Image (cartoon, rainbow, N blue to C red; front, side, top):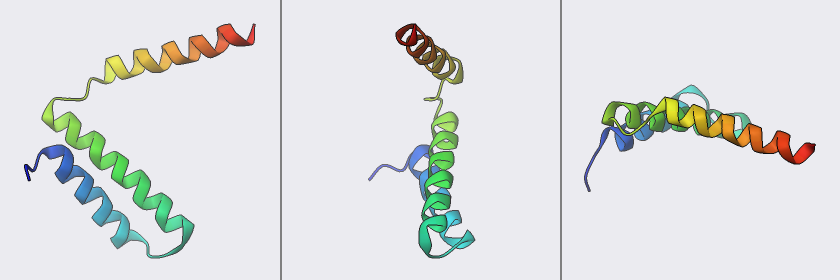
Length: 70
């Protein structure tokens, strides 16, 4: 298995989530949020995350929702 910064970031995020809280819905959500943060940090470190493109896509999705409401 090839370990990239994305995979490493995901592992660190999940490990921090387990270390931070154990059990229940709150722990699940904490692990989920930290796992996503780890993946994003890893993708950024790998150079595979373009925040400007992501922001443009999110703005485009918001514009699409506004058009359908009218």
